[in-house]
Length: 215
Length: 197
Image (cartoon, rainbow over all chains, first blue to last red; front, side):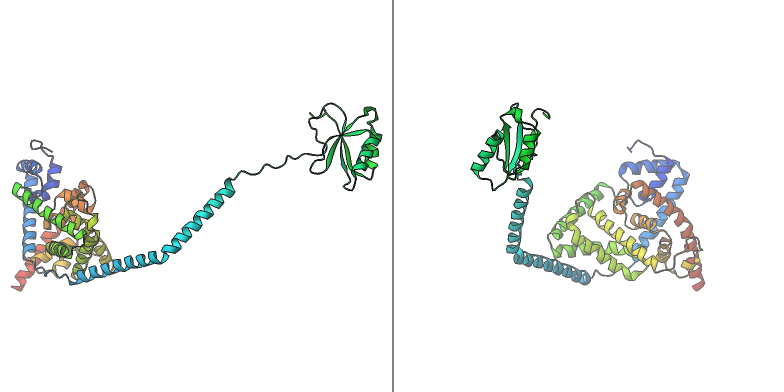
């Protein structure tokens, strides 16, 4: 609102109480007074409000006021300060008492966190690849058997047994004692050979490996 | 509040002094607090006395207000005048006290004849006070802050924490109600006074 800007009747009549209490800024004051000069309703309202303001000012100036008494509020502030000091003192004592314990607890927590992180993120050792006894492996073409001998079998007995069946060791023994044997006399590789091996008390397990079938 | 150049300069000087006092209070200066207490006691006492139906609670609420000033001096950011900030605290404390007192009192019947109040009001200020008591808490506050405490509508909006248009609307309704109440109350008092004479 500027000095030359006029106000509507609604705006002016709303602002009258603050014209009366002299709190409008100069621009508003001029605009409202300008409107009131031309408006009977606002002039009448202004007179009424002026009378109300005068009555109120009279009552306000004649009503006796008690002397300020700070005793009560000073006591409340003292109590407040006491409480604050007590709280601060308690906190500082607590900190002193727990100072060393805090450090120990902090160190223990740090160690626990490091251990936990190591357990969670340490790379797991690679487990041995799982294989079955008859699993096909990279072998040259030929005929092969997987055999597990009795643990009581002596070296000489093993040699005799291999010679007997015309077999040679191609691989093994594995961790579990499995030998891969090549059949040197392929014409002898038949069910009789396999049955003979399986019936031998020094052979715990014998199965053919059919190279190329599952590759 | 007067808006003339001299009045503005005076207000600025007062504001500067009050801000300095608050700064000292923030650092725990009890002397500054006593000074501010004495400065605001008359205004706050008058304000609260006119708002609260029970005079016994006025001093108590006044101390509550100034205790908040002591505790929260560091929260004053200078966004409003010191007086608006302090009256804002008083406004909220007064509203709480008014609501608490209303719980323990029979509610006033706003449409009843005002003679019931005039019957117990024999003084000029009594019937104004009686009329104020028949306004709602929000309307009573805006009338009090305007006519008795002399705040502008912008300051009242800051004190009450509401938009300026709300202040104007509350004042509009309060004026309508006062127009009905005051002539009735004044008439009753005059009759009683002449009867006694």
